[in-house]
Amino acid sequence: MTSPSLELQGAIVTRLKAVAGVTALIGQRVYDRVPANAIFPYVTLGPMDELSDDADCITGFSIALDINVWSRAVGFPEAKRISDAVRGALRDTDLALTDNALVYFQHRQTVFSEDPDGLTNRARMSFEAFAEQP
Image (cartoon, rainbow, N blue to C red; front, top):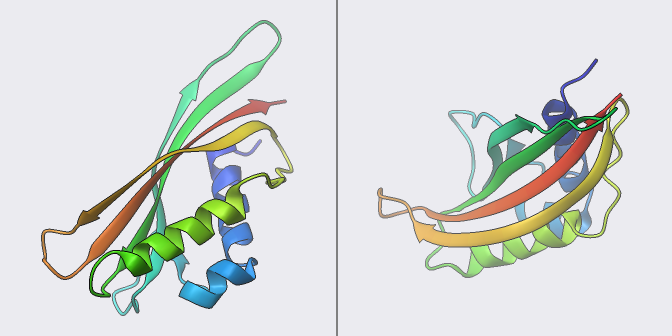
């Protein structure tokens, strides 16, 4: 049996790497662990929380996750364009899970900030989901 959050993470990565509007901006640079030689801009997944939310006859999980956009371009326009493309790629799409049933997946908030290094801009996108495990 596969963890719902692990399976959801794989579906998100697959989707982001397949949508032309995203790949035009970041290529295939979607990571859960950023390589030492990473080229900006890129997207990272995490952190992710999986909370048991069982009911009668249902093994359910509330999942909260962040998708982060990292940019070194001047100002926030690049980070905003990428975060909008990511949100568009994940909105109203069927993120197919093989072992679990995804009940819903939705964007909650995007926060734009400058990293303490003074060079990097970040868009922290918060999402929530609910999945049922068989």
